[in-house]
Image (cartoon, rainbow, N blue to C red; front, side):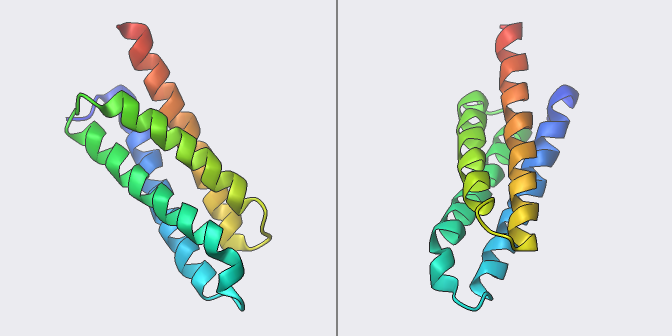
Length: 115
């Protein structure tokens, strides 16, 4: 069961996963999706690691801190990429990624401080 203090992190990971998948799908519908290949790749990587982080929290994995730290780093990279584009889906994805990265770092920091 997820520690209630970490539930906001789990929710941020799930919201980011959805935003990244929606962004990747929308990028594929752009006029020249080939120019968006780095964005699409990062969207998919980010969505996958967000899902893994949420799952790790849900099952209280021994690796949750490492997974969430990685999630924060990939979220930042995805946000950096998405912020290069003016599309609404990229802007929404970047915002979700920043929120998720912050939540993961906060969760990791809170847990490490307790140890």
